[in-house]
Image (spheres, rainbow, N blue to C red):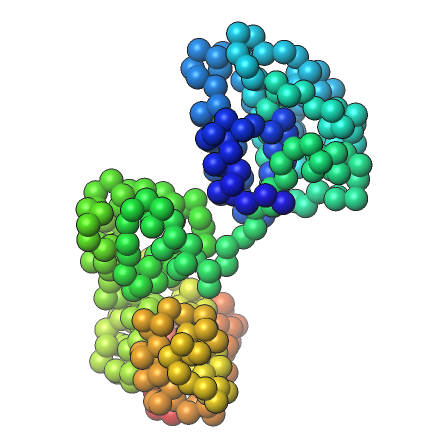
Length: 335
């Protein structure tokens, strides 16, 4: 398997492989490699005769092989990109002979999304031997802060931890959407100053004061007034603040507190590592640990599970989500 940065670096340096087999559950990285090849390997004059995009649903394997064997016209290479290549899974063996000796003047790219190829087959072994195989793995929510920070660093930007947390909360691990939002910020923001929560609010539209992150913080501090202010804001903006997301965030919060309660070593570094958060947020978490002993955290987890069931209409028909949430917050803070 090859690393994303190494693959892109080789392509930029015109070190091309005859076959790129890009597979996995995260489409963003597959598109990143495929789109770069499509946009940059050939110049505009060469693309007309030497670049083709085919779709796995529509194309026959024989057509791919026949096209791949052709020589480029007035160019050093031809590029053939097979999108939705996962639809060719049952027919890949028909390319076994070609993959054993692929044409050096053809760059054949397979976008094989949401599916894992059978690595035991001879055709796949041939691809691995003579080409580049890249597995695009999903970036989980807990990994997103580091990914965002690294992505922005590559572009020359820095970002405050709370601003990163806001992006993760509102967008999750949808890399394409996160990348699009960061591209917008890169256009309007000055590289010399960090991206702050206010910058996120002004340019992307997420409230820096009324979000699940701030709700968790207020709840951890037992700040009853702010908890209810945030819930009232959620009630007025239900589409932007679905209760299913709030429930998941609250559940995660109290699970984190339980993990800290189980620690003997509560140094900031160990807490951050164990819980999987930026050290910047450890102090806030420890405030909540002091306010909610272990047995109350366990009770809170039970109440949040009940909230999740009720919010889906089980045993609580017609009750507004904001009222359900307020009821649970009162019970948790009354512990």
